[in-house]
Image (cartoon, rainbow, N blue to C red; front, top):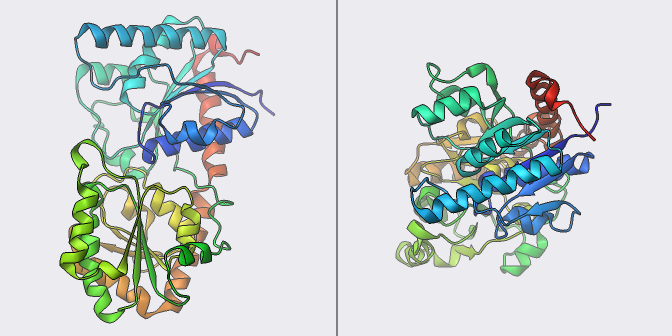
Length: 395
């Protein structure tokens, strides 16, 4: 058995899902497997709240400001962050620095170069946005990166300019789902009781932050069509309320239910931690996104709960959902197509159940946390080996 590693993970996200949830999952699993893991994150992040009881060292005093600004305040924070991270790398004898987005990417890289440890530098690309072609970015990826992880093959194939980036460093390791927590044997009776939903009532869930890019309004338009054939159907919408550019989205959606005449069929929930129970109470999972979806953990979690999915052809979703096998794929911004997919499933419960079972099987085969951590560990050891003698594991 190989010696445990000393690993520094860095995640600057403030969001509850997405890259923050992915980073939290890999940090948790690496810690459980005996590696020494230090996690640099925001105190407001999901990772901090979920991992603080795990006897795991977390650091929340690093600024990790996004977007370079040539101001005294930004430069001061940036330099202090580099100093702090470089000291951690040396004091903790870090072998791996794993960065999850752009702000910490630059900080972690410069700090590693200043340290005496020469750790392997790993980056994860969680988003379906093309990597910028600027000279500094290309130089950093090609010269100061030992490996890049993309959380879906779609990202590896379509969002790196093959003429600029060294593709031999880039490999896909899918996000992993906790298959013991997201277990289809769970009962959803508590959630149904909480919202006054009778046994046998069709339940559709949408679990996504209240942001325009998640396309909730098109789902509400779809529900207007669904209730014509299934008047008792209930939708559970759960997610964090929007910030900055998405202020007011929640209020717009609640107003839309009145306008569409479906107020009695919609239950709006805030951010919840009992997602497995919400999915257990549901018959179908829907994700009506109109953009983004770089990892779509919500879809993978629904699949793990053996739920058939109706999702849009956005980002990595066509990679996860197989048309007519584990669910249905529809065009974005098309409420009628969403409604057709939902009604197909509600009209044939036996086939919908089979689709859900096939979705669960796909997660067990490809998208579990154990598979994710094993592949990540293997990548770490290979990266250290390539890095050379100065990154030999030190205890």
